[in-house]
Length: 213
Image (cartoon, rainbow, N blue to C red; front, side, top):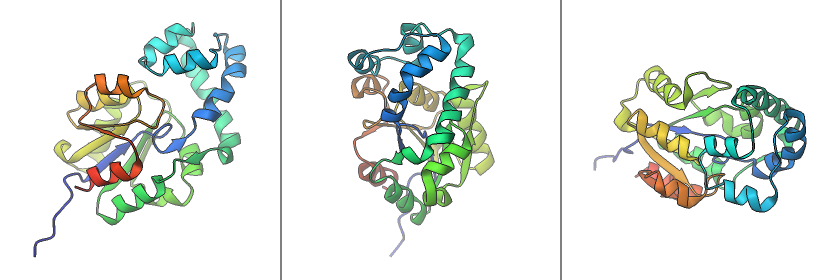
């Protein structure tokens, strides 16, 4: 009997909102972050509305100067380094990563967060990750995807990118790899669907079933 191979050999995961349940922590940082970097802090109702917008529109709505974005991102990374113990993985994520590993599918993390923070939150599950592409980037997520695909020597047709924001799906489309949107993260499901991902999943278990099919 022939052994059936998974259609994907490499999965490129976003971190915050896909693997890490960091939304509550991030929202708690907003008032002090807004004060420190001089932008408007949204209320709870507005936060929910902003979930349906692309990142560039969220930045504009809050009055954030593009020139301040690198400093804000660096501040967030530092804060998370101090408080990583407060952030957990989504339920089912460790099992998802284990199932992919055991099924011969490599996983990589692509994030603007620092590798140190990513490893701290992943804990023992970090050992299941084949590669990390983390920190600030001048060239965008698509360029990072392409770099990892070349580094790990995988055909683009055997790669799937998993994200929770419209920009994740757009980056996957840009480099011609499959895009999987997850409904449990930052982005609203309606906005994600409008970006036309190849898959929309609602639990890590469902993601595993698709990726290992």
